[in-house]
Length: 287
Image (tube, rainbow, N blue to C red):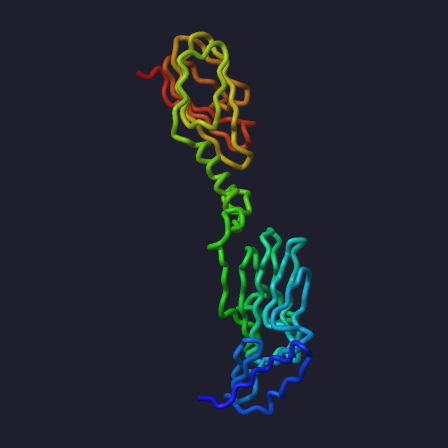
């Protein structure tokens, strides 16, 4: 049980701090509410001067202070623009720092090293979400992450970042869910049934199956094709003893449109936004 605890509450007014080299190993110090235990090489002591304070709020690029006067914790507000917080140069072994992103913008706070040091083997570490933080310790050569907090429990879906992938362009979870709902609608296993097409009928790629009965010679068209680079596929059943006419954008096998016989099951596929639609007759005069 240590006999002495020094409560140093004068540093905020610029008061003097003891030289850690004069303190015995195991000597506990409470500085600004932080307990620091001096180790055998006096490397466990974090001196804090009034100029820096324990916590520093920044809104632009910032390089953390050296060991004489430094900021333990940096709160980064990137509302205006993305920026970097650079770790201190040549810190003592055992130096601990924490960086926390406090704003809800999409601007990323990058934790960078001042030279060739790495952060868990990487050149930098990104904080993308509000309240996300990382705590680092210097091992004498590089920085190691020993604690991180994404803190998404208190975030809305619009605040949680999403990495665009798989054709989804959104950068947050809420927008990604909206896009996914659109994709579900595009391939929804519902049937569009038309009992009488008339002389013209549009076929939308947003519905998976169309069951169309012609009551007159009918000119068909297509709409709702997905963006170029995405696949759209539908099945169309055409009934009725009339003549279907297909748009010139349909590319049939051997460039020959199959002769219609009621009913016929067609499949249509596009991957270029509907510029070219591949057409196939899966069954002629079925049933």
